[in-house]
Amino acid sequence: MNANPLVPIRGRIIKIVQETPDVKTFHVSTTGGEKPFAPKPGQLAMLSLPQAGEAMFSITSQGPNHLELAIKEVGQLTGALHQVEEGQECGIRGPYGNGFPLDYLKGKDLLFIGGGIGLAPVRSLINHCIENRAEFGKMYVVYGARSVADLVFKEDLFENWPKVENMEVYTTIDRPEEGWTGHVAFVPAYVEELGFKPMTTITCGPPIMIKFVLQALARMGFNDADVITTLEMRMKCGIGKCGRCNIGSLYVCLDGPVFTLEQLKKLPPEY
Image (cartoon, rainbow, N blue to C red):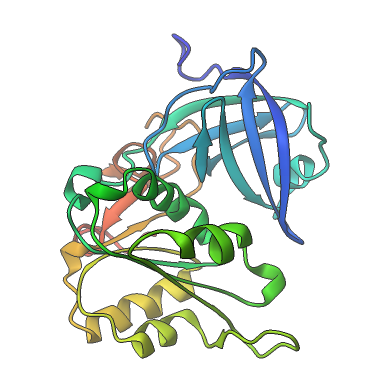
């Protein structure tokens, strides 16, 4: 990180993957071809484009010389990002946030639940667990989207992850589609249908999905301290100075974005 934490590193977008009609994954290196920094799973990066702006995004994975950020086109900056081509220079700074509690997760069976682009931060942890497979117990992934076209990271979902030892992957879409032979249901209903026994759970997705997933997990007897999620708040500085992402006395950019359900229940309902 630069001495001034608000000054970005000069980066370059070296690869762009079209995940869905409105989601692209950007592989970002420094202009010297190195990884900008080494984040923990669940941490964040501030990405900027000249003349377009700067915003915080989840880091969905990383390689030896790059970080990967999956970004949905929803506004001015993300719209500009979706127009750039490989080779475009950008700014990047970080890492920010606490990341997932890796030591706490070691040795445990893990249930990952994602919806839509919410799989992006969860994927960073899934990939870490796969790379360090012996340190974690059995792994289950339940992921859904509105349609087949909206399923992100299809290569991981249908080719890479199902081959991992002691790992099961369940996908679903909201409504039937011609040619889709997989499951059809909303994610919370599918989680209950699968009937998992209580275990440590990591979930991220649209707020409405999270709301009903948490209700489903409560009915299934899951412990609040073992349900982990990530919050998406508007973050401006990333270092706890601007006050854009505070919830009560906590800052999502510093104390989060990863919280347990037990922690969230003690915070004001401002998220």
